[in-house]
Length: 386
Image (cartoon, rainbow, N blue to C red):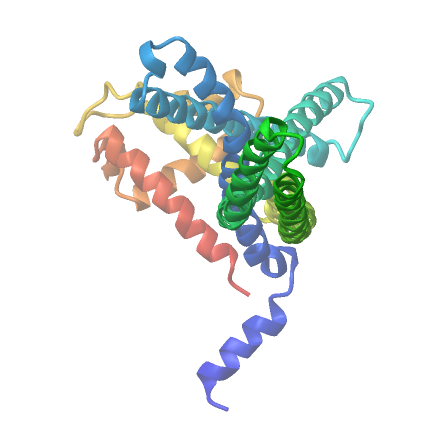
């Protein structure tokens, strides 16, 4: 093992405080909330867009065409983005209040944020879940296509069988016409022409038998056609039933996905507040003193610069008067020590210079402010010395 490897292992093992353990988790969850918002917008789009498009198209000449589509899309996306942004703000406020009050639901502010958050989350869940349901409903379109294909097949079969039946129907029509003629001839034949009338009747009977045979064949063709049509319709019903079942599974899957998305958004935003608050509490003791000192220095700096009106080379206020004013105007326990430390530090930073017993401004107000900010960072480095 080399020193570099040891340092990495040491950092990994030693730095196991709350911040180190949860920093990457906080980042991952928070970034996931934005992906969750996109997911919510995506699913809700399929619920909101059709309603807006229908309303917009109804108000435009000839349905609006592409303009109606463009306007409906623009308004839908805009509305959903605003809704998700408001949802994030409300959830963030609720999360901050819950974390800082230790889930004190007796607090009036917390209760109101909780009620508002519940309403907006339920609304968001409804939009995304309903949209996910519409998005995943594909069986209706597929079933219409199946019905159209089956109907074409049935029509095609019907035409084929009609052609086959047409031969027998034409033959029957001809036979019936012949019988009409034969019966007329029998009727007109003299009574004494027995053999002739008998022969004509035999022809009529033969034609009737032929018609019966043709009717039997027509019935057989109808039965055969009906069987094939029923088979096609049965296959159609099976496919439709399967599509509906598949739809149910897909709908449940997308409802689950949209529900998980809503959970990620809520939990991710809450965890960001929880993480931030606990990191603040973890470092408050170490940094609060430095932060307080920096703010006091900036206030004193603003005072001696007279809010920026003092320029380089100008003499600053006298030390005795400076201490008296700080003591009189502030509630600091040791104002004299604060002023002494302040003057030593800003002299060290090159903000003021000593000429004899007098102190003069050596930097602009902007430069001085930046130096105090950087000095704050330097102090933090010193605080980390072990």
